Figure 1 (tube, rainbow, N blue to C red):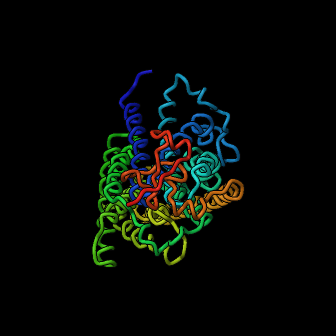
Figure 2 (cartoon, helix red, strand yellow):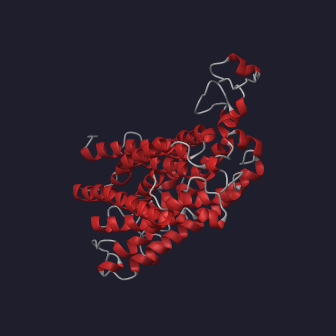
Figure 3 (cartoon, rainbow, N blue to C red):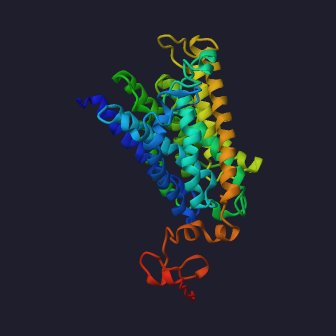
Amino acid sequence: MDLSAGHVWVMISAALVLLMTPGLAFFYGGMTRAKAALNMMMMSFISIGLVAVVWVLWGYSMSGGDGVAQLFGNPFASFGMEGLLNTEDLIGAGYGATFAIITVALISGAIADRARFSSWALFVPIWVTLVYCPLAFMVWGGGLLSAEGAIGSWAGEAIDFAGGTVVHINAGMAGLILALILGKRKGFGKDPAQRPHNIPFVMLGAALLWFGWFGFNGGAASSAEEAGLIWVNTMAAPAAAMLGWLVTERIRDGRPTSLGAASGVVAGLVAITPACANVSPVGAIGLGVVAGVLAALAVGLKYKLGYDDSLDVVGVHLVAGIVGTLALGFIALPAEGAGGGLFYGGGFAQLLAQVVAAVVSVAYCAILTVIIGLAVHKTVGFRVSEEEEVTGVDLTQHAESAYEFGGLGTGGTFVPHPATDRSAHEGSKEEVTA
């Protein structure tokens, strides 16, 4: 097999997308409390480990290939990817794994500060198997929502080039369900300590996400012309969304913030994801502005509606994902065999397809995530105790802390590091006087 430029580009893109998950760890880790930063970052890293193994064993098979009732692929068709050995299909399979990994990791931000790490590690492989893989099959693998699928053949084929439904609506909806199942953090909406503890980490994470997103959107480009359009749109939409978010903050709160700039970039990236190959650069700018404004307004809904979405997964990913998905019904460029969006005279066909895809994605994810989340919560317990939450999930879940200040842990208690201090294994704790 010759290694073509196209193969190399997909491999580079896969590496870029994989980098997004450690980037997300910085983004989320900086947004949470100092005593939960490591736990938050570990939730992203464990997602890489768990999903990569699931993907190799059965996840890839479930997201494509021979379908079962147009809902998911046969998990045993390429179990362990044995059937892909000595074929170029392994490159695409590896690329697909990185999408599954980042999708699951995105969910974790909704339950920051209060989730049991072991329960999260149980939730991840079940969710990616029963929710992500089937939805990926429905949209991209020839299932219900594809052109030949039962829903797609009736409503028309929805456009989702890089994951508006499969990744962002899916992750945002799952985050909302888990936030409702686990309930609010102690002091939600009142405790100033719940504000982001490290904004430079947040901005570093946003930068890594933006960098990796060029592979996320551009990896599947089929021509140089399409790749160029995707690249420009992936630059323009988040830039415009950042400006839209900052203007919204300036009008609403009196000042723009660094957190708003980073969040606006991510909202724009989310919105352009399904549309990156199907809108003009001017359309991408307009989409970015709308996504930035609406996401900025949406993140405040958690205080009005009373759900504790710790790191704004719902406001940024669910809302911006829906915006990007539905916008294609208006601004999709005409293409061969398709009339384009309403603004290009294409009629309502594309808008109907986008609405149906969004509704099906929300409903499917919500129902399955409720079942999985409640099963984990009722059996092994998904939430830490109030005492563990107050102490901090870094210490209670990992016996580590992100920051060491003279060996002092919470409340002025000396906390030895288990990897470097022998007394940690003997349960020794020594009170010190400030």
